[in-house]
Length: 330
Image (cartoon, rainbow, N blue to C red; front, side, top):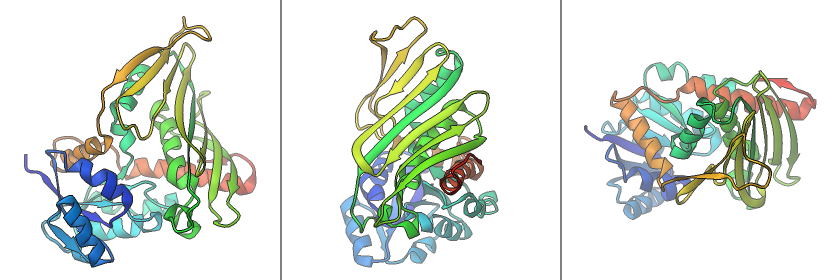
């Protein structure tokens, strides 16, 4: 099968350090072009990564007729505008999370998604450890799923970092809270009904630096999480059921083999948990392959714009709850 020809909008760290090298390992992807507002940055990145074409503007890349698909890792406020421009140029788009700043903005992508494929880049959904956890839940291994709990944090107080700039979509909820929300949606395989939040904002940046939320998925299913951009570097996800629980020690960015810890109805407090080892893999490679295969018609598009809108609705509800102090409908 002919490789999908990709172009990358910007020299963002996530692209340079993670996504591009991973996709270059795939037999489905060819990264042929990269663009930046600075031609020097684009050429430097292209030389470092072995990319043949470099452009000094995003529009030049979008005008390249050989490019079939775009990876959009721009700052959050540019996700929808540049995805729409790429779609108008006939390019399929894999857009970094969060796909938009709110669900109304995300809905602007629906019409374009009828002409090209658009998917939000949540790479964790393609990692075998996430697939295995959902398989265990679906098989009834832990009984009826009751609660998903997530903690995800790192420390970053750099004022120049886009994640600390409120006006362009910085903050903990947009950056990593979206993963916690996705975890609840993915593990419950359900739509959220309502949400409530407790948010602490940085007095200088204005971004939410520590955000906690509870999301009600109905039928007793609850997601609770805390995310922070100014706490120690840590992550953990637990899924609790009526007859057992599952833990992922590194649920979001594992660098090596991963472990799934499983307790069943016979496990007592203090007992060692059963361990399943998931071999090392690159979830960014798997994501790029899945999207490329969908472009080639080998598989259906795994996740569409409507899926991304569901995530944004929950984020919107949590921000509204910050102001109202009450539950908000998702």
